[in-house]
Image (tube, rainbow, N blue to C red; front, side, top):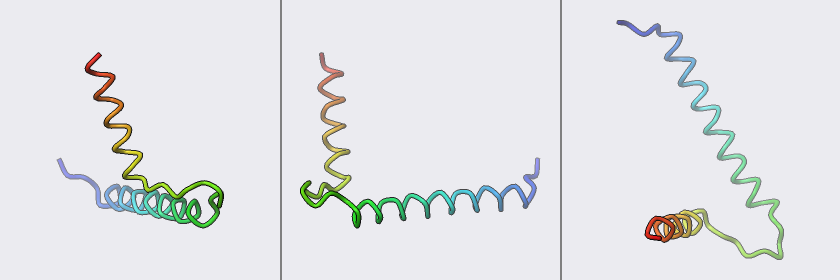
Length: 59
């Protein structure tokens, strides 16, 4: 079964467009954030969520 080239191109275009939107959103969030809140990197949020999920799983 052969996938049409147009479908592959459309999926790549959508992936690149969504990736660009996410990058611009992150940059805008850094520029226009509340100056009174401390800067939090996403890796800390991921680590905290992972720890919380493991704690919940152990109960």
